[in-house]
Image 1 (tube, rainbow, N blue to C red):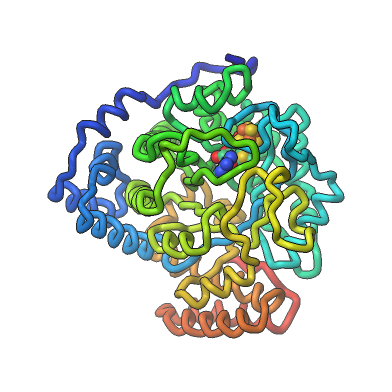
Image 2: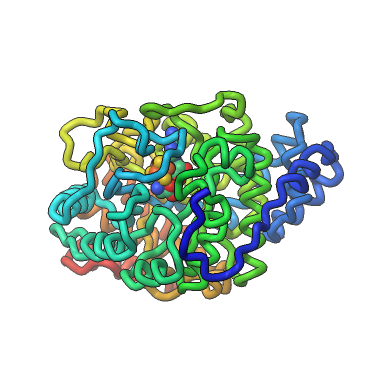
Length: 472
Ligand code: SAM
Ligand code: SF4
């Protein structure tokens, strides 16, 4: 295996495959225990691995319905009815790794490769701003060209683009794990979350999908990635597993173990968890035995919601609109919309996908406006809020605020303000109509009359002036 030459300290392999497998095998359905665990979740206490395993072992439909209902309730309590919106921006698909599920793997000669030039990046960001986006995640393959300095420069280029009334207020990253110095360099460019998916927590499966003679073949370097990120000042971390490589039960326990590890070691758990499901991809070689059914996918999202009450859950456009609609109520807090994953795809005329140019097939190609319209008419508040991270409410500090009253005082007002900006600056007529109706209804519901007045005043300013970007 290629050992990274930048190991600067001992890393701990906190994933014990045998222990996780044993707990899955030895845990059986237990209605009494499930009830106690669901009560604990409703008290917003994170679950242990053993408690999560009990929810995983629950098969009878009535109890699974209880799990779904509790996840819905918890989501409403912790996150209210907001859904945060973002878009991915692929910067480059050159890659030295050979992950067998990915169209960017190095052995595929037929993949069309491209790295956006600074001007091309600007053009993509202008297109994204013109559609109303405020939050992006930049995505990179792993390649010697994609150095920390290059990543940081890309972030700075994105923040500098101001098209019309548009601006990007938060840039997250999904890229290979870096060493300490690399994380510091990227952090200094002003990123929000650094996301690294372990893909599979199961060691043997990891070896099967990530050849030994590649950088990514080093399981421990990747597992330790977010620990190095935290130690380098990136206290806003996103973890994830690629569902479909191995048994979903194992991956859920791997994610919970990772989350507990970060919380115990650094006092801060991951900010977000992602749970991409394998999608068809150019040149992919997948063993289909672990494909996750829609029903199990629903179960695992609900169980994650209950196991980590304060961690944001991200559901991407890999999934179809129908699945996204259904899963949102179980505890998803962020979705991407208007997504294009072909390099330079945001300036392409149509929404056709060419699989030899993109990482995988996506299931939801609707525009941002269509997604927002659906959210508005199904009881959600679409939000582009970036306040917490910009006002320093991240990591440990964020946890202090994740308390009752926080949503009413910060999240809902900020969501309404960013929605008002979208409606004035970008929306279609029908979305505009649905949006102002929702804003009126939400203002009406605000019991704190002073807060209601403050929000209304700011909305008036958005309607009648060029002032933007108000934050609570
Ligand atoms: N090169 C970086 C890395 O490996 O960490 C960025 C990863 S990639 C651009 C983002 C994520 O997409 C991967 O971590 C993987 O989980 C996911 N992915 C790759 N192939 C996929 C597929 N066929 N279907 C769904 N998701 C996939
Ligand atoms: Fe490269 Fe990431 Fe694709 Fe693996 S998943 S081949 S590391 S882009």
